Image (cartoon, rainbow, N blue to C red; front, side, top):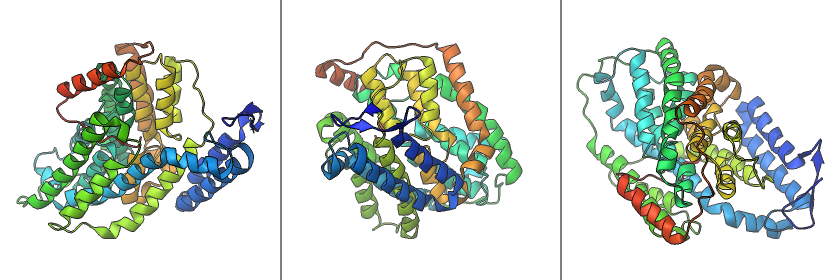
Length: 441
């Protein structure tokens, strides 16, 4: 038995493991086994965890329903942002696909496995300044056209990997790195995360591209004359810029408001509704997107209910392990705990928790979003079997990062408000385009 977050309460354990974690592990195991019933599994699992917390341990914010309400008040903004972004970027990816830009790519991409690899590079670069959900969905839309809707599961895993790896060295490319930036970590202290991410892209990108080429070769010059739908291109640009502007205004200029309302998600929703006057979105995909979003939100909410009050001592071994943990556990609370603890190499941690979630399809919001478009990817067994190169790339990329940059732990980085604001202003002047704060994972 160990003390819970609620004063005086006791957390039951089995062989030293809190029952909370055993419940969460059971949910993840059922998701892996019953991959055709993931929605029901996640909802039933969430209900079981909430019931257990209500009856036995209580919540960090207090016991019973009062504690549950307090916990939801703390988490609802992140959950609402994620929900709106998953649905919004799903609609946006359809706009992008119908703009016919993907159909024009065969004219510039090589017509062998190298073309598939360059597609992953494009996703990687997009994710360095865009939300990883958007980058993954845009990559999925391009792949849908280029490969005649026959996309290998291994290549889908690679698209998710590229979208997550691409933001790991940029404070505007992923939620976790943005959290570090706002908390006072210098953008230069995460930049070397790209040393690992770049190597990882090569390790998983080449075999994934070969897989895809063997499964369904890239579309050749069958569309010599492609007319780009410029209004749809304008819609994609407008929606993304709206989200970027909301990120800068709220999370940089008025950070005190960021926890009070889901400004980023609402801005995307409003932009899509406004632009529907120009081109109708594919509203037909919304029901399935809602279902997939609720699945992810259920897992994220379960993760926030776990009694994780501290991490092991900061070391490269801990950072490496957190990457594997982030494949099944929400990386936002992990990053928050690491920031509170201090002493990490922030570039290594950003690579680990940012890219680690790519190893399982539900390990990142980008993976869940892409699997809504490709339901066949909703199998842990098939994802691990065909996307094995992502796990191998994670380990090799981390090793390369340690060899190239070494473990560079930083002392507690907490500074005064003025110093933090100075860091943010300095970072803005050196980065030409900020991104959306909620990347999910």
